[in-house]
Image 1 (tube, rainbow, N blue to C red):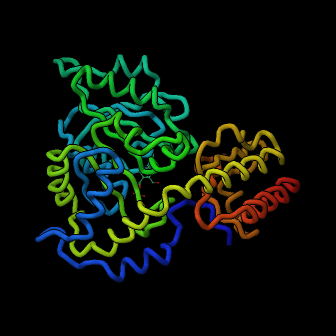
Image 2 (image 1 turned 90 degrees about the vertical axis):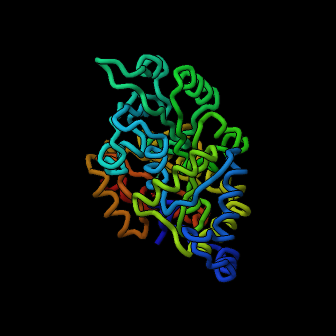
Image 3 (image 1 turned 180 degrees about the vertical axis):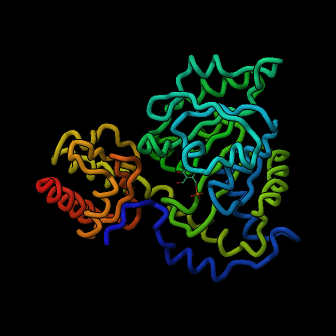
Length: 343
Ligand SMILES: Cc1ncc(COP(=O)(O)O)c(C=O)c1O
């Protein structure tokens, strides 16, 4: 099977498995664990923040960020296609007690005029803005990279009104790679940032939330409240350390295979996708012209040995990662081409 459903399917490297075996087994929530502390310090250094807290998942890191930034009952402003609004089961309202306003955007970047108008203080008539939120890379925008100038403007607008900014950087290492920049230079346009070691970086589990030291202390309490308190997490943190130390640079390969995939699909039919839209490791393919739904395409491709997830009624999302090489890409393109002829 050629598994293009997600970069979360990546298996740990031999070096990760080795480091997991040798990791410490301290109780992170009681006396602390040396390996977890090392991962958190490394994550803080890479993101240019004061401190970090290891989290079981990106979803929990985002949820804890909302809780730790506080202002229950306030409004969160975020791009309307963001993962948090569309795929985190409403934790923003159901758990964090925040209201939200989806700001329309292009390729994951919020419309700045709408954002400017929407940031406001609490009055008798309006809920105040609790938090401004960005996502980079942007999942539903096909792995689009937010331009640094856009991030700078968003951060500036929020700061003018004393509103904190969180960056969902689940794939920020992909963003930095595509920009040819450091992760810290991307994350500097936010107060807090989280990223996943469990995706293209190939560790089995985990994310790290980073930000100012006092914020991270609150985040540790909030993590406990939502059941994410960690015990002997050393082996998971050990894999995360290897992920940060050895896996970031190779993400460029995933971006190349994604581009090759998009070019192959484009050759089959230009309506399927535009390779120019592919900046990182996600490729959205629009199958509407076939008259068949994405779920049907997913089932048909599976019969041909290609696993891919529907992202919308007529959109398939292909994700490249460490286990996908050029021949896999060509086989996937071949499988879709055959089905497209018979459609
Ligand atoms: C942008 C973004 N944020 C958050 C998450 C959630 O991460 P997790 O699956 O670890 O909860 C994802 C997962 O795909 C994501 O793409």
